[in-house]
Image 1 (spheres, rainbow, N blue to C red):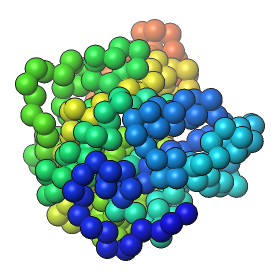
Image 2 (cartoon, rainbow, N blue to C red):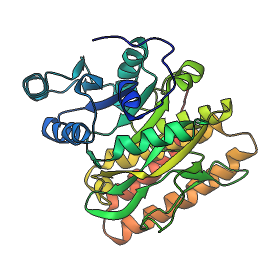
Image 3 (tube, helix red, strand yellow):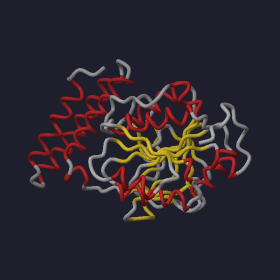
Image 4 (cartoon, one colour):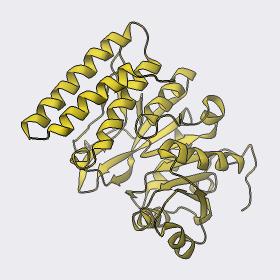
Length: 311
């Protein structure tokens, strides 16, 4: 692979952007899903050699399939499952060493629009003040409904709210929208951010790593925005946490760990009460639907988040 110059020229057009961007996709035992995701990236204009596929210790036939069906892309094989943060960190380190200007993180259970890279390139060229850019992420099974378009922070707290969450994209929406947090399901990040604040915190094995990363970027002065015209679709299910209780556990625990890590002494009691009230609400809903084990897991996860050791 030809390495880029450590100080590439400014983005002046779409082709420049494609050659100065490395896309990273992490796989764990989902070869067919990942291959479909990568195909959508290629259809949108991604260059095969500018895709890093990080396999996170898969135990199925993922490696053989990747070597057979996508020989042009860069395959990085981790011996064990490092979680999302640990997995992308391996790819990010390699991309930075190869001199890339921008790094695009993409979940393997997503599909992107044919104009995806084109819209991101336009945003990079015309809004250079933003070093983190989030696409508009829609539900795969409800393609007009927004799953994530960035989040804003409630002043004085660490509580966030999603912009246009579960709504359709308004007509005439701005081409770029400043946000406080963005979802790593799809996130374009300039190399300056990594060189200033470091990589994702691998202690957030599942969930919370992107919130922590954006928080550190904001504290250092980096600005981020959402790009509504850069569209992608995520195969997220509202019932996922019912079917996979560990996702419920780590979502609660890691969110609280972030509050403990980032919050001030004044904010800690506010966030403790906020998370307790939310845990009780979720607990009550589970009990109402007869999900007693899940209900107990919710309260235990809340307790674990606040009262177990976290470094």
